[in-house]
Length: 222
Picture 1 (cartoon, one colour):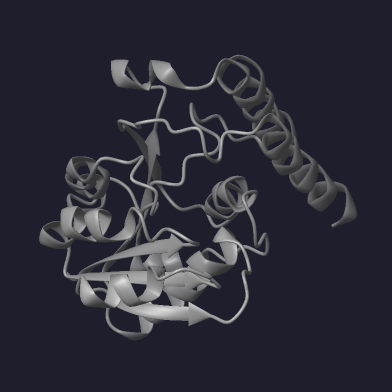
Picture 2 (picture 1 turned 180 degrees about the horizontal axis):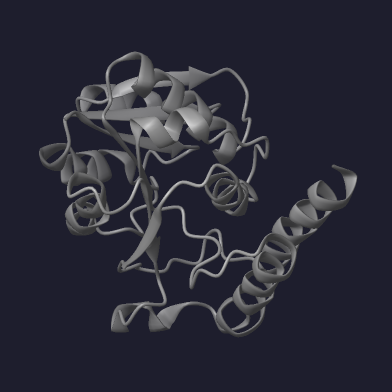
């Protein structure tokens, strides 16, 4: 069973080589989707041995993951792992994220920052105490989804699940939409604990509110 790791990347020249080097021994192929970067992200990723797919303009993480999924399925992936390019995730967690798929107990696995991992306590206060509870509540109330981590970008899915799960959110709200698609298609799912090393970038309060806004708009417009 071939394991493909899809890494969406936008201006991650500082981190991409290290991330690829850590992930590469654990999977069969690393697929970096260079999402319109203006730095050397794509070139460095190729030099590090990844397959690089390029978006001419920045389309968003959700769009980049769709591109990576499509490539992986066409090229024979049995399991697809989604992994961030900024170095916040631990590659050592890949084995436990894919384990439920390999042993047949789940078709989709979500990495959770809220399952007894002490290193995750550095999550920004407003994100941990306000945005995450709001997102969990929105998932429960509107979509009947009861998961501990509503916005983790670290997940894995079988090829069967990847063919079923189709999301339209191009930017960060895709995390919740993927969960919605998994439930809608009656795919078996599991959560496993992951470690996250927090950085300042990407932790804005306004960004979290935009995610919730996009999900609510999609709910009521559709």
